[in-house]
Length: 321
Length: 300
Image (tube, rainbow over the protein chains, first blue to last red):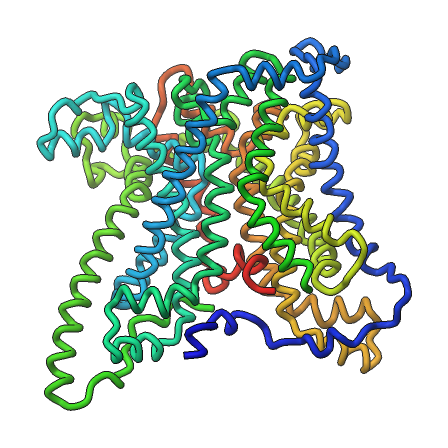
């Protein structure tokens, strides 16, 4: 049973702890710094400076004129933040973002888990085409997928309306899926989940293939039902992968932008505004860059707040080397 | 790590011929049920891909039809030639390749050294480096649009491919560092030490021992980097206003919101062409597919 309790151990490389204890000579080592300098330079240039600018921007009043003439805006202190925090549109999009994120993460993880379990059950002639299909779906660029789903749901020539009408549903002949935001979001979420499934499924299926067959057989011999086999044998093995897949899903789904933005032809209606879109339209649509910056900073803080656990876990792993 | 080991049964569960037969037939009917579900999933998930190619092969009078044809009646490649002759298509495709390959190559070089530092050394500030690498994932690209646009204008790098390639390093480099770190930490340190005992210098150890052993990791990492850079559209559409300096994603968006109504045939042909390079890369590395994205995170 020890192996069942700690099957994760098989993921790790052989322990090197004994060697690690042997301290190298204690002098200043310049090698790691030389190695890491290019990375630091890139991050400072491409992320550090922009982030610094965005923080400065958040405390200024900047419009198109200042942006393009590169004049600094007027300092307004916390004005932008208090404007944002007292804006009910902001809170509506915060609420919407969290709701959509939860729905997306739950559904995509559930489908991915189901699909991964299915992949381990089906015959080879079914599994191979499914895996190849997953690769194809994975390879479809986001924008392509958006246009694809837009074409599906086209009111006049879309195949979705045609099929629904054929199946006997009334009122779908020239149905516009994006008038009612609930229906529109269902289309967008279907699109996001369809695109997320390949990565999540392949990751989880890879984890499941590491579960020793004998363990499952042994558990079944002992009278465990399929659910118990999953809970005691499969789940402990894939748990680390499950945690990472869920964390990455949260990160990606919270940042949802392109799918909703492009689906609404770059002019999303208020009910399609999640945080990313809200900050973008405040900044570029209303040319109030300070306000957009303030929303961006609040978004990053929310994200970090949610992901404290994940960041700490990753820091621990990375620092352990 | 391959995904294809399931489905073989070890017969330790059966004790006699009679048992085996009964058990086998129950297994068979269960298998049939799973296979049926698998085929259904395949059809549903695959339909969008099929429909993209299906539409791309139809003439306008065929796709512009209230009763869609599930098999094109008069398949034609004229949408593909139409796409190649459409405004800015060829240049956008070319730009996509230049920017993506540039960003991936630069990230691989920089990222390999960064990953070495994190995977093989303890140094002051290491945690800070790791944290910033992780922070990038948490920062939505939309956030960077305003300041990066400003910076690129200051540097006179807006509307250039060089500028956008540098900009893309913001997500390709940290990703490469983190993923390669996972691959490098899986190489036993004993190998480095043995090489150094045998007289290799530190740098020779990096290039002769670790670099070749990281090979599969480099391939997987560059494919994922390729996909990210290939698919990006927010930064490029805001920083480069010149349509001749944009990529395929920007072309697709422009074509979709065209003023004369969308030509879905040409759009789907363009979409198919845009997907092909990534499909090819994926099929090429499918064995290592699963390890890539999570290698950095799971293994330590």
